[in-house]
Amino acid sequence: MNASDAFLNAFFALPSGTFTGQAGARRYVVTRQAMAGGKSHKLVAHELGGTDYISLNLYLTQNSGALLRPCEMSAEKVSSFVLMLVPDQP
Image 1 (cartoon, rainbow, N blue to C red):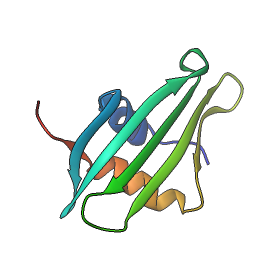
Image 2 (image 1 turned 135 degrees about the vertical axis):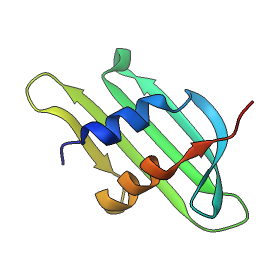
Image 3 (image 1 turned 90 degrees about the vertical axis):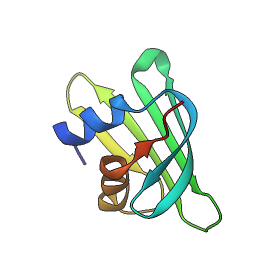
Image 4 (image 1 turned 45 degrees about the vertical axis):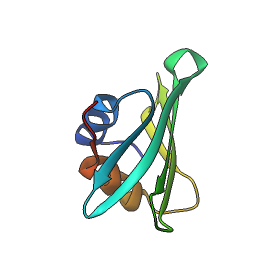
């Protein structure tokens, strides 16, 4: 699935590294990291005090654009999560 502009804007506005934040009524610890010289990105989130888990890879390709690859969950779930996620202020 190609990533939307809204998703990409929200994804790249998130801090790199590990941080905490809120999506909806749930709090998460999130890790976002760039790999392969910035051509590949990974995001993993664990709900604090709960069981929710989010995992995705994002590949930036020259021919196909930005490809969103959720890990064993729907693209809608990961896209909604990234769009709702508000990082805590330092």
